[in-house]
Length: 156
Image 1 (cartoon, rainbow, N blue to C red):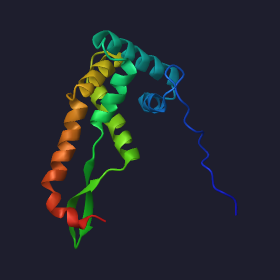
Image 2: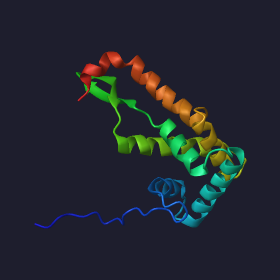
Image 3: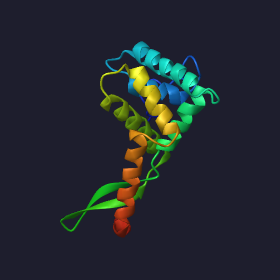
Image 4: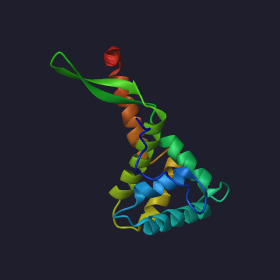
């Protein structure tokens, strides 16, 4: 029996910064397969970040923003004897990154009435400074886990 390989092509680094994280973020930002539109919005956002935070490279601001949004613990539903409990569990590294990217993009998409690159730049700067909607979501997740730590013994 042969080795099973994924049919999807491997993620390639983005053309400008040669970063896999940027490439993954752009793919998540993309709608309807329009990658060039998503890339332009992302790079425009980094240009704005460069102007607003001149002392730090924009890629570093982006990477630190994603790092700041990553949750360490989350709650998962677990059924025990007919009752559902919110059980706090550690989050593995891949899921941390996925959740951070998702929360940043949700925060960007919830804001209405401005171009995406402006909203994205604002949210990334806010996350870099440990404020904003994505950080609030992370704090709420941690707070829920803390509140439900009495059920930690149900963790599987």
